[in-house]
Length: 234
Ligand code: 13P
Image (cartoon, rainbow, N blue to C red; front, side):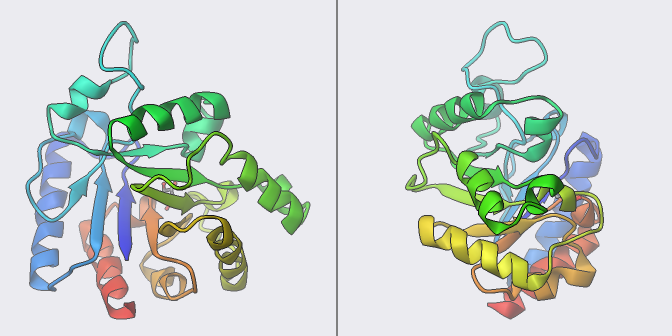
């Protein structure tokens, strides 16, 4: 399984260091062999030699240049970071990233051989239109994306479930992941209000290969518990 924590705009560099130490200890103590990914904020990126794979939440698809407020390849190469999150709903909806710019970003990091955690997910109004509209919305979010890319991981995160405490029914997650599986032979993570209280059930659903967790992973102890659940399910 793949268990990933997305810190979003949370935690300082020192808090991130402390968190990583705790998670490394729990990985060692529990003999975890599952993949554990952590996406800290840009100011907390650091070289990390442990079992946790560190990824960047967002990188502008350039080596360097005049792009005020962005970081590029040079800034993450400094820390040997080779994993990036692309297409997160907060990038799409808050920062207005278009499918075209997301696909360009994808191509850039694919050419660099990065592991890409590529996020898709529908807003509530689309879900309410029914499953055909929902799958067609997800298809549009895959436009221009090479779903055969060797180092691709998909994260299905319904927008209305992110940070709200709401999750789809387990049967709905199963149906959507099953439908995605028909098209994409890559690990499929579920994201959106995963926490200690529901992780066991969610990780046990067919075609769920792991989770991408925001608020529910902010405490190292909780993240470790979820990692332990993943190990038990496998
Ligand atoms: P929450 O777990 O806080 O709902 O966030 C999910 C998410 O967006 C992870 O990328």
